[in-house]
Structure formats: structure tokens, C-alpha cells
Image (tube, rainbow, N blue to C red; front, side, top):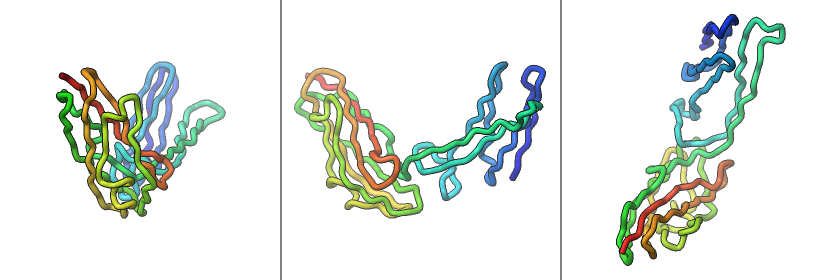
Length: 187
């Protein structure tokens, strides 16, 4: 599908052409001095992907009445096909000496198997957060289109807001995958 749209910016007209079979790349923002074109990433299965990352590239071309038209920009993004649900964990307020846990689902939304090479909890308060379910979790790999679960825990040692990041290392370009975790300890 080839979309063409004429947009007036001041005294100039711009014609936007987007080559996109699914028609999802269609968001344009105009101001008096700039045109911003944004498009969602669409994964290999054709669905809009808000929390996944894969190697992708493309070109945006803006056609106008300038002699050097079109103006083109190459787009490139790198990442992985792993998605955490939820995307972050807030354990809320927890009494010191009490351990709370939550379940995280890891989804492989890509088209190939991802191999996990390790996991760690990092950050200033990392000692008060934990992970169970193996290191690395998911038995070390996750086939395309499948999910697995692991647990994260919070056991506060002080009366304060705390945070850490669960990092999952794998063989994909955006490694490590990160899961922000927060909680507040109280006496």
C-alpha cells in the first residue's frame, strides 16, 4: 500500500509517501518549523509491538517543492523479541522482615528461539530484591511464540523507597532485557 498525503506547512506543501503494507505508519505532526513522522514498530507476525525490540530498518522520504527533494532519513532500530509482563513491578509498602513476591511472564514474540545466558539483580538496593526460577530462568531458552514464568521478591531492610533492576541476558541484539522493580520498606 502506498499512502500519499499533502500537508500544508506555511506556504509550502509536503507530500508524504509511506510504503507500508499494513498501513500502520501514518502518524504525522506538523509545526511551523518541523514535520515529525512517527510510526509504530510492527513485528514479524504483523502486530504492533510496544515493548519488543528487533533489528529493523527503513527509510522515510519527504517530498516537497525544494530542488533537492525528496529529503530522506534512514531509520534503524535494534533490540530483542522478549517481552516482560508486567513491564515493571511495584511491590508497594512492605513491612521489614516480610518477603513479598510477584510473578513475571517472559514472552518470546519473535520468530526464533532465544537463549538466555544469565540473570542478575542490579542497582543500589539489589540486596533486597531477588529472583527465583533458575539462573537463567526459563530453562535457559524460550522458543518463538512461547512464554515462561519466574518469580521476583522484595524483602526490605530499611524504612525507605527502594529500587533495583532485574537483568536477563540473552543472545539477541538488545540484551540485557530489563525489569525495573520498586518497593517501600517500613517498620
